[in-house]
Image (spheres, rainbow, N blue to C red):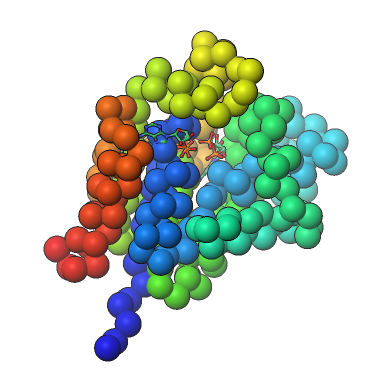
Length: 226
Ligand SMILES: Nc1ncnc2c1ncn2[C@@H]1O[C@H](COP(=O)(O)OP(=O)(O)O)[C@@H](O)[C@H]1O
Ligand SMILES: Nc1ccn([C@@H]2O[C@H](COP(=O)(O)OP(=O)(O)O)[C@@H](O)[C@H]2O)c(=O)n1
């Protein structure tokens, strides 16, 4: 039997809408690769913080954007991320990195560099890939076979996020999350946006299992040529 052509799936949306959990599960179920592009922006931000780069100064960020070597593992069962050979899966999730990532990801030189990495990984995935982020359907992979834009109410997103972060309260989590969404949506370089041809799924009232099933069905329909 001939093997199916690779399928490329772009999943975008704001924080806490379920992109990572959905993308990982969909990729695992369909034996596709998986790429968390937020982890890449977090990794370059972690490197800049660790090296004392002035994040108030976009030109200082731009000047060193090419320095760190960022490598993403694309197995949905074991996604990995390293910077210059160091495993940074833990350090990229600190509140400090979360608070600073939008300033770094707004710099065009950073985006150009990370977008190149993303396209190379998508192009080399034999069976196909699920790529999640903010600008995958609009900029990184505008020819993706399927584009999904996940949304959810700010309350649902804040409740989900604060459920993950021990000791955080929903109110401050909500404020931090909305601030980051506003920065990501208003930047000039490849802002968070829904592609015109993306399928929007509001996950507010859906369980994670329902969202996964919905996206798996959309991918299978594409693969069947519907
Ligand atoms: N539909 C859903 N209902 C309830 N909780 C969800 C749903 N989707 C995701 N979650 C939970 O919300 C949290 C954030 O999900 P995540 O996939 O990391 O979102 P994102 O990648 O969009 O920021 C995780 O703990 C996840 O298990
Ligand atoms: N394709 C992408 C993905 C993330 N990002 C940036 O990276 C940050 C972290 O993304 P993330 O997906 O890890 O964030 P969460 O939704 O997990 O909180 C975002 O707030 C954006 O600033 C981006 O600019 N473009």
